[in-house]
Length: 205
Ligand SMILES: N[C@@H](CCC(=O)N[C@@H](CS)C(=O)NCC(=O)O)C(=O)O
Image: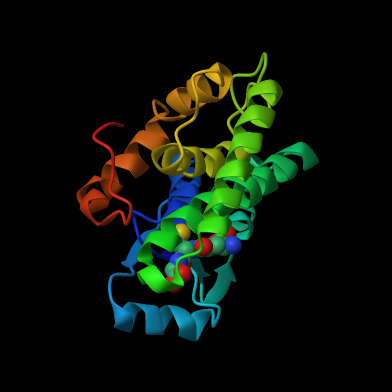
C-alpha cells in the first residue's frame, strides 16, 4: 500500500494526487495538519516539505520523483520533464514566494522579491501562451506529469497574480485543466481549506 504524507490544499501535494487520481492508483492519506505530523514528515525527509510517499517502507520525496516512481507512464518524454520543471520552477516557485511573503511579519516582508516573482509570472504566462498553441495539454494530446504540475501552479498563480486577458491560450488551458476529473477531485478536496489561504481566496474556481 502506498501512504502519502500530504495536505489537500498544498499545491505540490495536489500535483501528486492528480497523477494518482488520473491513473486510478489507490493510496492512503496521512494528512499533515499539525506539528506532530510535520515531525513525522521530517523523520522521513528531514527537508520537511510535502508530499512524501512511503511505498512498502521505502521513502520517496519530491513530487516529480513520486509521480515517476508510481506512474511512469505519465512521464513519457524529455519534453514532459522539461515542462514539469517549467511549471515547478517558473510558476509554482514565484507563486509560493508571493503567498509566503504574506505570512511574514510586516517588517520582514520582501517587496522587491514579490515584484520579481510577479515579473517572472508575467514572462511565464507569455511563454506558455505561445507554447500551448495548437495543443490540448502541455505536451500535446496526452495528459502527462506536466499537466499535473500545471494544474495547481496555474490555479494558485492566477489567484495571486491574475493571468491577463491577452494570454487567452494560458487562460483557456487553466480552464481546461479545471474541468479534468482528476483536477476537479483535487480542487474539491481542498475547498474546505480556502479560508486559510494567506492572501485570501477569490470567490471563484
Ligand atoms: N520540490 C518539492 C517542493 C514541495 C513544497 O514546496 N511543499 C510545500 C507545500 S506546497 C511545503 O511542504 N511547505 C511546508 C513548509 O514550507 O513548511 C516537491 O516537488 O515536492
